[in-house]
Image (cartoon, rainbow, N blue to C red):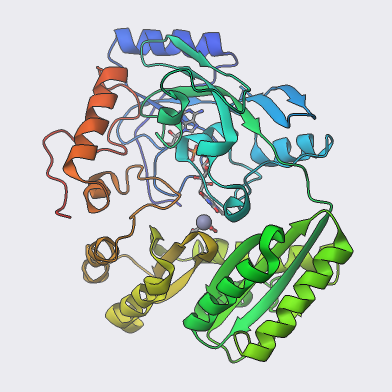
Length: 437
Ligand code: FAD
Ligand code: 2HG
Ligand code: ZN
């Protein structure tokens, strides 16, 4: 994002777990801090050194170890690129359980370390469920081997979970076993217009009820998001040009029988039009159009990135109150900035972005801490899927209470007593007061 700049002067590029282990053993003995780096696509500055931490790039740990087509278990090294893995497992009739706009660059190790969500979360759930095993190098260089491929295992504490979403602060993930679902034989998508946000919610309720097992994504964008993507890129075109509505939904279905899925989708659309939940809609006629629909959604964060100042918030908020926060923010900043709201509505995940020509203290003070305070009041989370990184390390208290933060500090102290792993990320500095709940 061009927002975070470190002073690192050394990057190491290990090829094996053994090399990662030797690097960490050496750094731990000499009190040298490290920052693990995957595809460097993170949005909260987690993979960027704050001072002169040594960058440990995981890019050369990029081997696929095995794929079992029967169980669907993929075992691979952490530096494999998500898109490459999806292409590889496709040959066995499988699919990666997650998908995100950065798939062409992000690593599976980075995905695991941020507990990335993305557009398949609604259907396939969190990496806390899909990751079956991990190999992790601990701060002192010891290799923790919990790289099982078992679906069920209740022998003691589930240690791998600690490293999923730890943003490289507890260990370096070097390999993973991941459960991959069967690749759907049929996929379809529809782009819908809704007059109000409550109609978007009504459409979501109806989609869950009528489409059931074939519903695979339910993304929403407000008109400001759509206009931005369409206005920035020539290849992004609205399937509903001239639509006057305030809200748009990209709904995807995936299943095993095209006729069955189409029948269900069309019945749902007819009923949604009749009830007034949606006012217009377009159904993708082929794979090319399906991709074009996704290009609109993926074009929004890309188009935001063309602005000089970008205030980016990734919030979990109960769906019923989600859009009120966007409206309040828009009213607060007025014409000083452009405010958009979009995201993974099916998962209660709002991406609220405020962009402008330049950062200013006035704008910043209108946005923060308001955005975090209001999220806490609504019972939400200040980080739904991007992590805390360096951007929000001092914001954890808006979502987690003192006892949870104290226990996290204890875990960190136990696994990384010298604090060499990705310092200044995730947790506030010791003694720093976390914001009141
Ligand atoms: P990096 O950015 O390199 O690192 C992220 C964090 O993980 C850092 O703290 C780093 O130190 C740590 N880390 C990396 N590798 C390891 C390792 N092997 N062991 C230990 N720690 C490690 N995120 C979503 O959740 N959902 C989305 O839909 C989504 N869409 C995106 C779209 C775009 C266009 C972009 C640019 C980003 C998007 N992201 C999304 C954010 C980002 O892609 C994810 O957070 C991704 O999981 C980061 O992976 P990475 O390999 O780039 O990790
Ligand atoms: C997405 O869902 C990503 O597109 C990025 O999580 C969100 O940049 C953002 O606001
Ligand atoms: Zn997202």
